[in-house]
Image 1 (cartoon, rainbow, N blue to C red):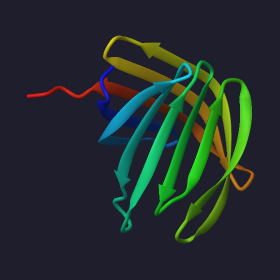
Image 2 (spheres, rainbow, N blue to C red):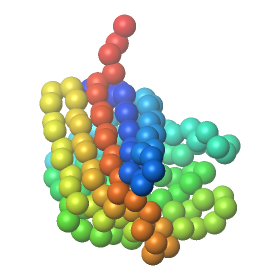
Image 3 (cartoon, rainbow, N blue to C red):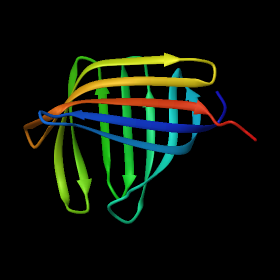
Length: 142
């Protein structure tokens, strides 16, 4: 995979009366170190001023998403495990529980895809079942 990549992160939150989808597309940098994939990119936030510097780390059964800037969070998705983190926003801090049921990573020559299925709770209250799809592909030149 080339260093310059396109990053697509789409998420789906399953709710009783509707499903809510969100997608972020950005350019980023990719590298591989000690058998783990790393992607660094910037995320522009729609509802507030500022940019978050983001890092995605993909290992065999664990994916970390780290955001620093306007919002700060380190989310750990580890298959068949619960992880708790704190999501810092300009409006205050939230405790976030992530119950990861499945991680599926597919590697190709110029593309990596990952699918994460998890349950989400905020401040000990279950919010919904969710899914994140990551697509990292070499940026085409010309």
